[in-house]
Image (cartoon, rainbow, N blue to C red; front, side, top):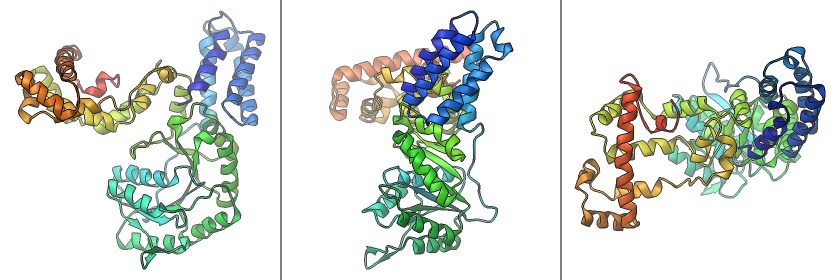
Length: 449
C-alpha cells in the first residue's frame, strides 16, 4: 500500500533529516521533491501544491529552524499535514435513531461496489446489527447472483424482485420494497446496492436520485477504485454534485502503490473517507483512520490497527488458557492449527506485515507467500487427533501416511514437526519472560504486544 509514494517521500526527506540545521534553501529543495513525489502518485495538482505550501510555511517557523532535531520535526510536520489532508478524524456511519438505517451505496461499475456492500453488512453484523441487502443493481449480468452468493457466506438475507424467474429491472421498486421488508423482518440496517456504469451518465444519475427519493437514506456512500487515481476523484466530484453523498469508500487499497486517490479525494470533494477495503476477503474492510494512514505512508507502520485486528480474533480468556498450556508444555498441534486459523482471519500477510513499524515501506521487496500456511494446515489436518495431541508418537510410517494425505514430501512433515518443537521451546521461554499476567498467542509473536 502506497509503496512508491512512501519510498519517494523517504528519498525527499534524506536531504534534511541528516543535517544539523534546516535552511530556507534545503526546505525549498525538499518541498520540490515532495511535490514531485505527490504528482507522480497521481495526487491532484492543487492538493499537492497546497500541501507542500503548508509544510513549507511550518518548516520555516523559527522553532523548527533552531531545533536540535530539525529533521525529526519536519517529519512530524509532514505527518500532521498528511493527517489534515486525509481528514483529521475518523468518520463513522450515522445510524438512525429509529431503525432501519438505510445506507445507499453508489459507484462506477468495476469499483468493487457489490463486494463492499457485503463487507459492510459483515462489519455491521459483527457489531451486533442485523442487516439486509437490497439487490437494486438490476442491469449487470449476474449482479444479483453475485450479491446472493457473497451474502450467503455471512448469513445475511438479500431482497430482490423476480417474475417468472426473471429479474425485474425496476431498481426504485426493489429499493422501496426492500425497505418494507426490512421493517417486516425487524432488520435494523438496509444496505442498497445500486447499479454502476462504465462511465458517469445522466440515466444512471437519474435512477440513483430516484432511489434516494424513494428510500430517503440516512447515509449515502460513494465507492471508488483507489487504483484509478485522479479519475476516481473526478467521478466522485460528479456523483457528489448529483447525490451530495456522506462519505467515500476506497476499494483495492492493498493494490494501490501510489495513493493519489486517498490523498486527493478528501480535499477535492470535501467529504470524509469512511472505509478502506484492503483485500478480497469479506473481512478485509476497515474504518478509515487518517492518522494511521499517514503513519503508514511515512513508513511508521500501524500498530494500533494490528492490535485491534488481533483483539478481534483472540479472546483474552482463551489466550490465558493457551498460555497455561504453553507453560505446562501441553501446547499441541491442535492448538497450533486453531491459532493459524485465527491469524488468517486477521487479513492478508502482506497487509499485516505492512502495519509493522519500519517494515511497511519494504513490503514490496519482500517475497510474502499469502498461502504460506496452506501446506502446514494440510499436514496437520492429515493427522489423527491423537497424533495432533501427541506429535512424539508420529513414527516414520505415520509420516509417510501424513505426507501422502496432504500432498507433500515426507521432508516437509519432518520440517514442520521440527519447527513446531523449536517453536514450543521459544514460546515457553517468552511466556516466562513476559510473566503470568500476560496472555501469549501467535499475534503477540508477530509483534502486536
